[in-house]
Image (cartoon, rainbow, N blue to C red):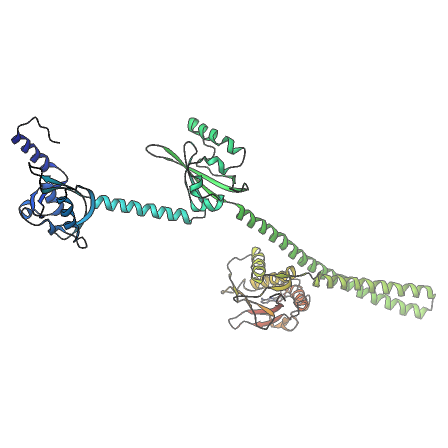
Length: 499
Ligand code: ADP
C-alpha cells in the first residue's frame, strides 16, 4: 500500500495527493451510505462538487432501474465483502446516465470494525460504447461473410485455419469447429496437400507471389473426398503480432454446369437454325425447280402434240411419256422434301414450358440486331408440364420472336410479351405480342402460305412452317391485331398427361 517510511502526517498528505491526482473517482462513505469524501475525479465524473456531495446520501446517484443495488452493496460491505469491477450505471448531476465500473472495499477502524467503505469509480461509458461499436462491426462483418456466396478461410502463416465461414462450411462439407486449428492443406487434393506448407514457407522467405493477390482457378477437396473446381483469391493481412492470409473461395461447379447448359443451348440453336436454313433452302429449291419443271412439262406436251401431227414412231412417244413421269417424280420428291422440312421427325417429350420459352427467347434474342427491345415473359402460376417436340416448338417461338423483333425495328415502342396460360383444359396457350408495324394488309389473308413475305431478303416460309408444326401439336396458329398497336400470335400445346 502506501510506503511506511514517512511519519503519519506525511503519509496522510501523500495519500491525499494521490487521491486528488487520480483519474479514477475515489469516494468514501459510511455504512449508512453518507458520503464522507469526494475527490476531484469524482467531481468530473458525476458533475457534483465535493461541497455538494459530502454529507449527502450516495443514493442520489442511483440510475433508473438500479434502485435496489445500493442497499445490496452496503449490505455486502457490512459483511466485510469487497466488490470488484462491478459494471453498472449511475446518474450525473445533469441527468445523463453513465456506465461506471466500481470497486468498493470496507474501511475498518483500529479495532477492526467496519466503519465505512471506500469506492473507486471509473467512467466506462466511452469504453463501453467503443466495445459495443466494435461488437456491432464484428457482427456486421460476420453477417456479410455468412451471406456472401463465396466461402472465406483465414489461415495463419503456418497454414493453420483460424476461421471458416458458413459458405465455406457448405462448400467443403466441414463445420468450422472441425477445421479450426487444422492445416488448410486438408481442403486441397494431392499434390497440394503435401506441398502447401512448402508453398507458404517459400512465400514467407522469398515474398514471391504465386497466388496471393492474384486469384486462380484451382481444385478443392470436400470432406467426402470429392474434388471440385474453385476460384481462389488470397489476401494478406499483416497484424501487429502475426501475419494472416484470407482466402476467398468460389465454387465453380455451378458455373461450369451453366456453361455446359449454354453450350447445349447453342447447339440446339444451331439445330433450330439448321432446320430453318434447310426449310429456306428446300423452299427456294422447290420454287426454283418447280418453274423449269413446269416449263419442261409444257414443252413435252407441245412436243407430243407436234409428234402426233407428224405421226412418227410410237417409241419416241413412250419415251416422252416416261420423261413426263420422271419429271413428275422429281416434283414429288421436292414436295416430299418440303413436307419433311415442315414437319421434321416429331419427337414429343414432356417439357417444362417456362424453361422452354426462356431458352427460345434467349436464342431468338441472341441474334437480334437491335437489343433495344423490352422483353417480358409471363407464366401463369402452377403451369402444367407440356407434351411437345421441344425443338419444333422452340423453332416456332424463335420464328415468331424474330419476326416480332423485326416488325419493331422502326417503331418507337418496342415491347415483346410472351404469355403462357391455361385457357382451355388440358392445353397451355402461348401468346407472343409485339408493338410493331402490324401485319401488312396485302398479305394478311395468305400469311401462313409459303413464300409470302414483305421483306427484301425474306423467304416467307417461317410462318408456314410454324403453322404446320402448330397443327402437328393439335392447335392452329392464330393472328390478331394487338389493341396496343402491333400483332399478337397465339397457339396452344397439349399439357402432359401425367400432370
Ligand atoms: P419472312 O420473315 O421470311 O418474311 P415469315 O413467314 O416468317 O417469313 O413471315 C411472313 C411475313 O409476315 C413477313 O414478311 C411479315 O410481313 C409478316 N409478319 C410476320 N410476323 C409479323 C409481325 N410480328 N408483325 C408484322 N408482320 C409480320
